[in-house]
Image 1 (spheres, rainbow, N blue to C red):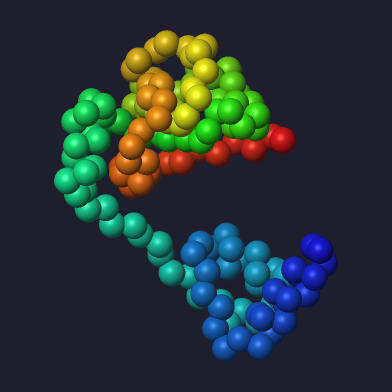
Image 2: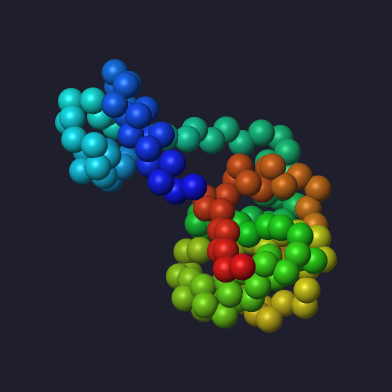
Length: 146
């Protein structure tokens, strides 16, 4: 399947008048692969955040520190790969988080936590409004192993 993807991408680049990408590294990689330096343009991707009422309620309900970098991992923990990812986060990532970060774990069937540092991690389990959690998070973590 992979060779077909490269072929289709090459055709799209060849026949397009402009190719717009989100970063300079993407632009440089496409130039390296396909040449034609005049076709490629980078646009800065900027996401504006407007906190609505439900987001404010989430912030207040869960005492979310606004000044910390908010990381989010969510999923159903009855699904093996999500549980595997959670255990990886607990053993490899959370111990290395700086004090200006906090990780929220959300999802059904949350197992017994391995770590209890409330300044770095909060196990919330199922939350009603995951969309608001996603919108107030700075990063979404999705480690994939199996």
